[in-house]
Length: 232
Figure 1 (cartoon, helix red, strand yellow):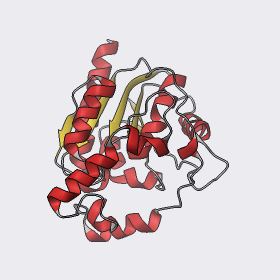
Figure 2 (cartoon, one colour):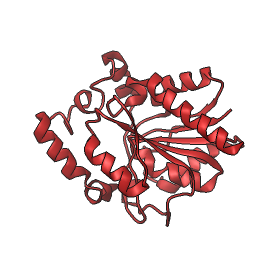
Figure 3 (cartoon, helix red, strand yellow):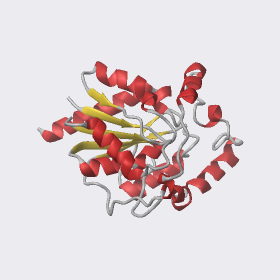
């Protein structure tokens, strides 16, 4: 069985994965979903990766999964530990020397958000989190998610992504077709450009782990099965 390492996004907590975790454990897999030190101004990307590596401990058969901003951390973990698969879910895809703060312009995301907002009447990139992040999450669950949020330190945003190349690990991307943070047309192109793969797609907003946990878990389980067969 696999160990799923679930890395949350900016200003979030491991709790955000709890519904997906329940699905994965139901199928006999182990799960690690640590809280990154995102509210600690002394912590950068290295410390984020250190936190995940420490939480993993001696576990093996790793499937490292990252949501959104966690895309800057997950490859650092996969570069340090033997990893069967690396998965980005509506994730940021860093390139060498790029900082998270720069990403929004260098990747073309800001331009894509402006263009999509013009088409959908301002839903994409809306300042209301219930419109942008949680529009397809049940209201009570979305309110609980907001209560779990923490401040996101600006420290890692200023730090260049340190890897020279993407880790030599089988990589997957899960694209959320109703994402109002990362417009799907733009993100589909970016996945091809930066990862040279075609994404898998699910009908969900940015926070698919809360809005479509079973569908997302099924995709992750498929990746674990593929990884297991590769090792046979």
